[in-house]
Image 1 (cartoon, rainbow, N blue to C red):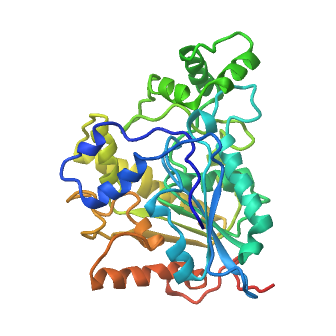
Image 2: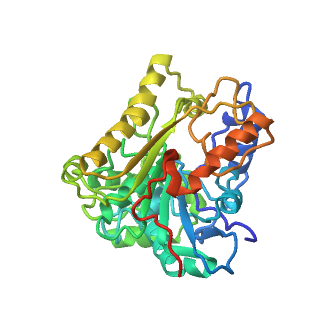
Length: 392
């Protein structure tokens, strides 16, 4: 590949973030990228890494969705690079950009969907299905996976397209259904508040939409920062989120899960052992202090227990499930001395990225990279349905 497209308009780390105490060079490596992005509304793109396009034997495809709480994120991130995984795993790696904030989750009832971000993701998946063979990829063996809200997106897709998931397997890295989506009324209220802030309020909704569409994205982003965040038990939540429409996002996930109304594909899911090691940075940036007990509850409710529930649901419906927990804590992956195995730290292993390490760490990475050989997940030789070897 030759380079990345400009990022979809999003928020960036707040000013206090670069002054986080005792931050490491790894911290700087991650956040320097996050604070030096250029944006464009012409941002829907995908990146492809392939071992070779000249092959008789088509390769499995890994289709990755980045996280960022639906407010930030881009494929132009050192943790999302796919070249090492493609080379060592003999797979084709695809990463995608999709619209964020109000651009991805607008609250207007007059637009085609309040969940445009998921339609962006679906369109990218459809494109990969139709074209990946030209890059040496096997369209019948696509692992759809994501990290954080990217992993959450995988869950939304499983319920939205149960009979036509396109993918042959799912994987969620530290991201499962653990938050309620917005009601249409709540999303509409945020949309109306935003329209008022940018002088686009009008009794005719189509007029509001046309006015908003004419504005530069910078004006929209500046106005979003003035909106009140949604308070939660732990950290404030953004305003523009997946919204119930009963087509892509539903109001009855527990009922649907119990009835097995989701794509029953092989599923790998897990989380890190110290997710809050990353979220402590977000709390610092917002001048929020949580006790250790609160952080422990944060990790249990939002990750450990949520993953357990997701696994149990699938097991009840005889879906093949693989669960992991990541404990890796290395000098060259820490973002501060006590960050531990924090949220997203396992991407260093999944994608084979990171900084220089010692022999022990390299040995761990080499062993960890075997996840790409999905016919040998968990050290067993059991073939996983939907992932069988095929040639064309």
